[in-house]
Image (cartoon, rainbow, N blue to C red):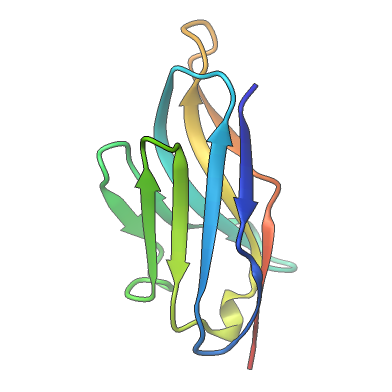
Length: 121
């Protein structure tokens, strides 16, 4: 059973910073890509940033230059440093990881429970 637990959300003023963290635990063989998604009220969940097992990153255009994704392979964690936050960044942020738990199950996506980020103007 793989679990992802996020932390670090909260309320911040526009222009401020927050750091989200996500820890993966459980029984698994390999962690492939790890990512952060977000979902604002009334909107679809969208990809914010992704980092591969080799450390390659990709960002949504709306957060490029402001957000930085990183991961610690030894600790099985992924973080999202969010700077210059804007009110439109307000959303529930979800951690995601593509994980191989066994040869039989293959690669499957796992999700955290989500953490609220609210940016006030």
